[in-house]
Image (cartoon, rainbow, N blue to C red; front, side, top):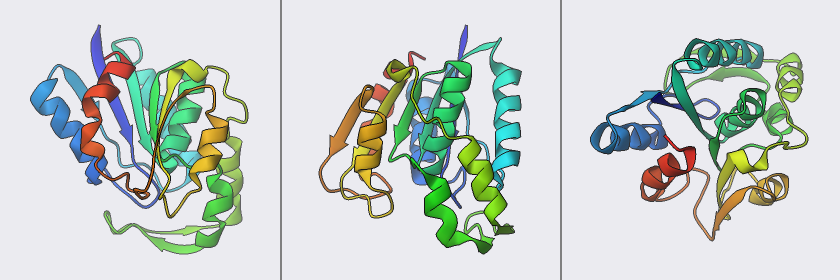
Length: 192
């Protein structure tokens, strides 16, 4: 069965994010047999949920799928992983984005795509509906954390994914410094 890697970017990000591009470039050079899909996620949670479910359903019979997600993308990967029993690597994942993003209610502009949109409390409720309160298949997750993350408290992830494979590095930041060390190991973990 052919292999498919789906990379989900974070809040107000895009397929052009550095880590997404590093994964894609690694696969292009070292594993051209892996199909890499890096979607521009819809800005609204309900639309993102529908889009991602359709994406998995379109590919799941034809491909062995592995997920990689950063920040909000890590939160979405957690939900997708548990919903479809897929392996996932999470990079500085958001644990409770529906609390964190309350500060961003109102008009937004995605700096990559230029899209203008408005976040309202209803969107936070939609995000919360995707929360996986208890991880049922911890073996499906490898979580990469840097203690210097200035956006998210890495300890929330450490606690939530305590039964999963964890890599916690000192210092660093939310972008996950020196991520280029990991693509080979990520593909190995995802068994692609």
